[in-house]
Image (cartoon, rainbow, N blue to C red; front, side, top):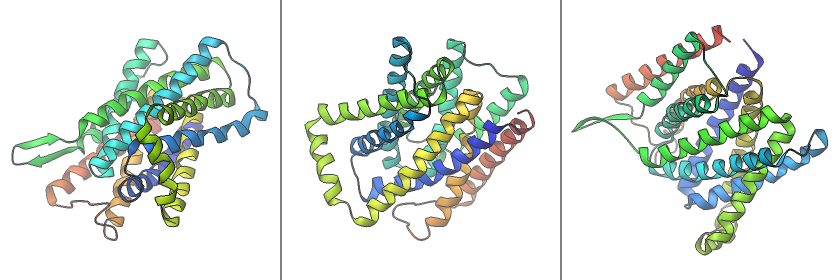
Length: 300
């Protein structure tokens, strides 16, 4: 099992913690997804403390792609947080887990950045199928997908950001690539602040209206998210961007387990329906994801 595979697993565990905390905060504390995206984006400035460990200037075209990668990531965050507000976190994250690798695969082939072996293609297919399956819910009209609009847009921008990031890492070292792409996040967050008067007002008022407990939760969430993002980017710099994104199925399994447990204590925030059809559906998704990971680990 290769190093980047293990690093990616750890990253998605931290992303699961980050996702649960984000659902709490978006439901109970910060109602505007743009405000939340601003604070997450602007806090990326801390990566500049890594400058002495390997920051180098890059050619202007590479710099522009790095900035575009960061900006695309902030756009993805806004639509992702909007989707989280609409429904349970255990449904939205699997949608992203299925759609992001799909878009990434398309972008990677178009850009000539990546290719897959036959075994990896089977693993990729199982991971995507398992992740997407969980979003379908049985209604009076039959089985149908839920909440695709914001999730679809978010997945597009996440995939675009990852592909641009991989290109930047191919042209420079990890520290430089990380810092220049995160500069794009900061600049995009500033644009959110500057362009919308309403959002600007909510950005100023959010710290005063948020309780100490929720502020602490934000710090925990962001620490987990930042560490996860760092590890994910490092894994991308070492391995296959397509496979690493397909591994988001791990995050879904962990989110589902956490949501089921925590919904007993916080039913208004983390509501999970545990009926027989839903349980069969989610277990099937977990089996598909686990099978994909098994193939992936054997071939890594």
